Amino acid sequence: MAERTPGTGRPRGFRSAELGWPELERLPHPPRRVPLLGDVLGVDRHSPLQDTVRHARRLGPIFRRKAFGREFVFTWGADLVADLADEARFAKHVGLGVANLRPVAGDGLFTAYNHEPNWQLAHDVLAPGFNREAMQGYHAMMLAVAGRLTDHWDRAQAAGLEVDVPGDMTKLTLETIARTGFGHDFGSFERARPHPFVAAMVGTLTYAQRLNSVPFPQLLRAAARRNEADIAHLNRTVDELVRDRRTSGADGGGDLLDRMLETSHPQTGERLSAENVRRQVITFLVAGHETTSGALSFALHYLARHPEIAARARAEVDQVWGDTAEPGYDQVAKLRHVRRVLDETLRLWPTAPAFAREAREDTVLAGVHPMRRGAWTLILLPMVHRDPAVWGADAERFDPDRFEAKAVRSRPAHTYKPFGTGARACIGRQFALHEATLVLGLLLRRYELRPDPAYRLRVTERLTLMPERLRLRLERRSAPVTVPSPAAAEAPASEPRCPVHGAGD
Image (cartoon, rainbow, N blue to C red; front, side, top):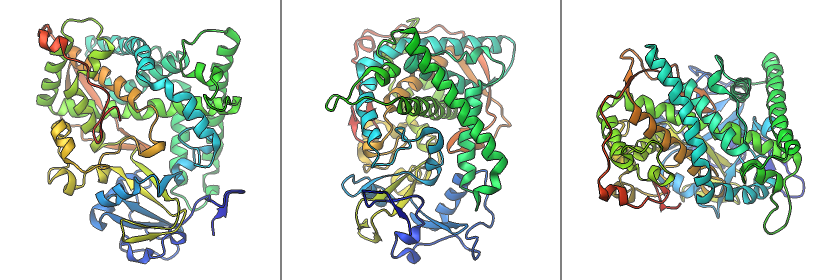
């Protein structure tokens, strides 16, 4: 049986599905199940998410898989996901892959258990760091970092070289969150190789993924030692960053680090401890750039492969931004088609591809499947976002018009969840969407994107998703941009819009 968290009665640690699903035998599982080992025949340990998606297509909207004595339930049907979004009956579950990151992120916003008080404290202290006023303050720094990217790409284009899209998007998004959130410059674009922080981060994510695919952690002793070194490097980097801020007395202008160090909870007056500050900084530096870099990389792949969609988005940028050297904050929100390109990219390849939900009390999922308190399921977003009953028979096709307002209103709620759901949804989603929309607009305005005809999309998994070895050739645009019409220039900026619920969600 699962252990109990002292003083709460809540189950903790990994709980195999048979402990929480009384009618587990009703759920289908892959064929050729092997005693003791489970459903391991044909498994690719390097791409467990994509492997599970293949099973999902055959097994249906709820199914189970077993590996080395541990049973998992996966869910993707629209009615099931909508029911799991009910915050009164279900809550975030820190699944196995996320729990594997707790040695580095502890009770940070992403990895905290629901009963840990530091999650609510940090959320309440940091949430104002993502309101409209704060976002406007970050905009100029986002532009400055994007300028470093375009300088880098201009040099590559002039030399006739292809650009490393995932590598350069990682540099961009790391520098963006480091500068806007913490006043730090990693110098990523001045380095021939990835910054050691990135190497350590990739190491910890990869190790957390590998832990899910072995029966005994002792089999990864060498990898565990490397992981300990990676964690130590992340901790040292963040400790130096925080120490520099404290000793220099520099004013961060109310950035995230300022809020972590100086802000008290508005009701309780409590402040984040030094250890919690470290964990939150690591959480933001890792989660704040890894998923956004993946989203931008996938979006550039699709724009290069669909020149007609790129042309339409580019025309919108030319009309809305005109010959403005640096677009203003409100001008980014007017790029509605560019935003739809991003939404559609995250539909097909949500870079945080799954999240888990657990029952707060004994309940029946969608009126069909009994669940005991603490029972959990992993929501498989690539299948939620490809459900033909919701998205149509052409759900695999890249089509940004799926996110036109009328189409969004016609779909059931909770069928598009790239940032999670409920109280534990991604706190920085508007930051990520503004940054990504701005960068796509700048790149479309400056370059024509030419793909390698021989390239076939392969996806790297390290808890997050990233296109593998994506290279593009660039051509500088020769056509002048057009000055927007008065009607376009005067159009009000749209509020941040959730493709499910509407403005401001």
